Image (cartoon, rainbow, N blue to C red):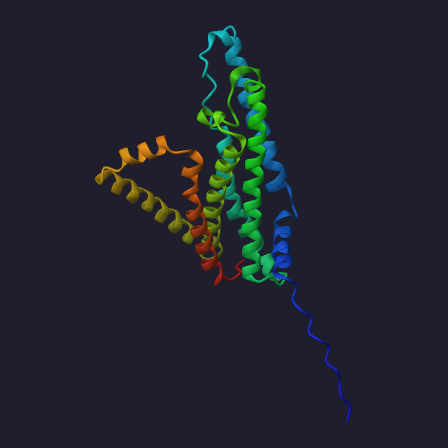
Length: 255
């Protein structure tokens, strides 16, 4: 009687390596998420800088402008919207491919969320560093505030990083939840998702109006540190991430 020895089962790689493989999948093409956004940043900043110079020359010099003429600028906020859109694009483009490589939905999802967390932290760090350069150069020699507009220019670097990282994380996790809806139900599900989100926001605004809560909210926002205020977004980010995972668990690849 011949006994055939079966090969020993190959142990599965540890979770950390599987999650890292999912992160590498998103970073395989660095242009959409790691290079192009900084090029857009440079373009938007360059346009603002050119406009500041034109206005300064037209006014006959910076001494003829108000001290806060260039303090208010929303150019840097585009990266927050980018994080939301990029989350939807990243999952819609790589979900089928990841499952084809043998990744589980859990490993893929954890890697995707980890990658978005790293992106939010990286962009926040870049903005914080450039804001310090902006402060040291007195607003690029023109008193401009692009990377830290309005009251943000007076915050310490770590608070500026934390604010941008927390808000960026919130937008990314909303994008993750929306991406999970897209992967599972496509465009119809995404329309319903944003409709319900808008309905929720309008309902919350109406409820605050009828309960006369706007004034207390304004007092809270004006009397507390920005870092404390944005900390309240972290539970919302965690909730969105949890909802996204529950939706993706039963999603199937579609053409």
